Length: 316
Image 1 (cartoon, rainbow, N blue to C red):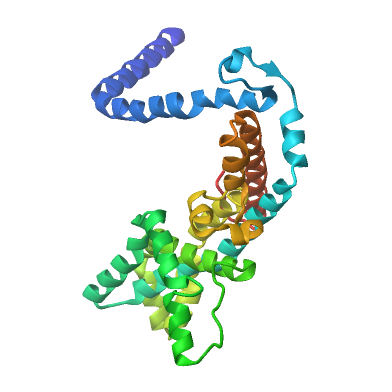
Image 2: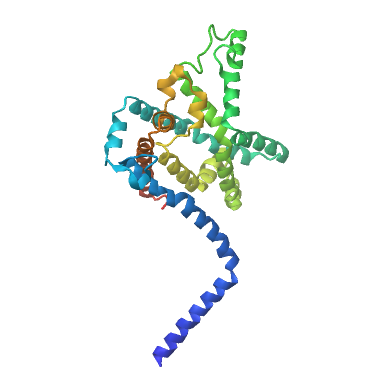
């Protein structure tokens, strides 16, 4: 008797699950499309990582190429330019993190405190627009503004008498890094501002009202209510940025860089393009990419574990 009752309950649950599946089949179909996309275009191509351990021949393919183990990694690590590219990647990403990470937080707080809706929308548009510009266009703007002899900044400063000679924004290593970071902050600050502003607008407004009743001014409200309220968002984005310390975009250093600052602007992505792809050394390029991914995974795991030690929510 008891067995029959349990069997009936199990059958009833199965029917209810099937009915729910049939009722929401359109939603499951919508979910199926991105799953298939990621399997076909993201996970399946990962099989190609094995060429990092092969003497890959384009005509023989993955199956016919000779297995060489760690030879590609040893060769890449022994190249003179690899330590330079690795060091530049870490330095530029660290500078981006140090100076660029706080900027969207400050901008989001400032926008949230604006009470004139029209002015707020204008500022939001101005901040968001650079994110949608191509780096080719930005590269042209950089030349117009920062060029050593004809740039707007140098021409203006010379005319005002504030400098005696042109500042080598694009031709000297230290100044090139300064230009690189400034341009990167300007281009990306709008995207980060959107995320922080969304987090701020979701905060419980009763907390701000309680703070005002207790006599807290604007700065105190920001410090004791706003920042703690978006702390989890800040931690998650910080972890993701730390995980990208070994990865760097190709566009910005390639377009802004030049041969005069080759030892400063050469990063892993441009090194892979120059030493791997243009020379047809796909196995070595893949080895560098795999090395980046492994180190990035280690960094993001360490950052996530560190956040959890301080009782913060990490990525997992």
